[in-house]
Image (cartoon, rainbow over all chains, first blue to last red; front, side):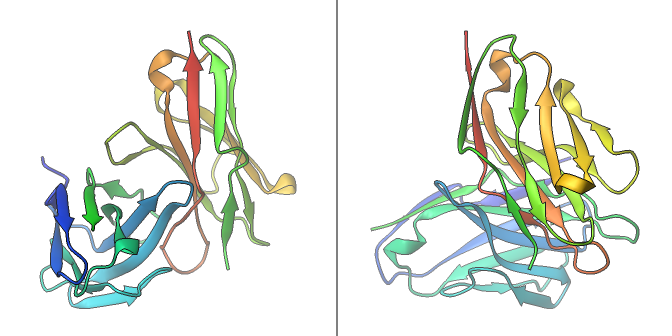
Length: 115
Length: 114
């Protein structure tokens, strides 16, 4: 069981280039999330989705776009990369089938460097 | 808005010593609370969670946390540190009665000395 898989794991971009990070989960989870992790800042939510075809902004959405065309996939796009977007990006998913909130399952991260 | 504070960005202990990592939340209504651990170059994984059942919650690897409503705290403890416990620890909160979107603290790096 793969869980949450992120691709690519590493990427170097030049300022102004675009790219897409792919997150795939095989647990049939409804909720999916994109976080960025920076030293001393913890995890900050970029965008999230509560189901196929829906997305919503998190704490730091500027400069990013997302799509959830299929339940198992959640894509994070950078249209014009900036050095401030150098970070480690984590995708997570969770099942919220009623009752107390479930735990988040995380991918291994994607390290992005923007020069 | 819900917030969570982790006191101390770094905590250093000797192997075999007590581990105490602090987490406080701001909410008038007790939220759902989680502790996650992140080992180097890996994603986060769940250590334990509080969902309004028992106030003392036991997790994996000998960790436990106690929910104290009067102190709005959910501190993580382990009686005896092991070298393998060295990692980054994150406290997270989800408000009760609504969104399932967690807010994470800034993390505490646990350093274990031999």
